Image 1: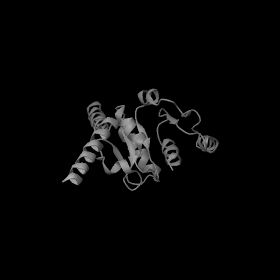
Image 2: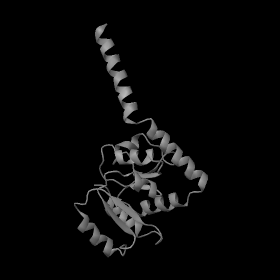
Image 3: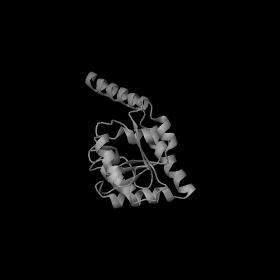
Image 4: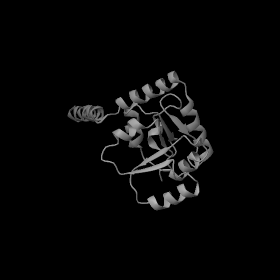
Length: 170
């Protein structure tokens, strides 16, 4: 569901200097290791497994790609943005957070997360952005995430509950 097949195919279309670190559940690791081997990507794909804290992974990455085929929101995208990491993510038909994102403002949005060529082009594009463009994208991503912290959400819900309670009292 997270689009790893598409991501591996896209990686095979990129320069050999581009590597992929995969963090998360390893339930299908053997299947993906076979695909990695078939694509000749063994030296470029690194399975990190489940990490108690993704912060080191975010800080060591140049970007985060999330070509998900089904994700109700995509908290990993928000988390990456909070770490000032530029993101490539499926559009709102596939990933809920994309309803709130703007292409080339705070993220790169994929039209079709099944299309490895589109993803490869997005990766190439993002990796070749000039310093100023990349800085703007990272800054807007961080600002987006800063407005969606747990603390901000709690304050908004508290205000909503207070408003609802005041409405019932009148």
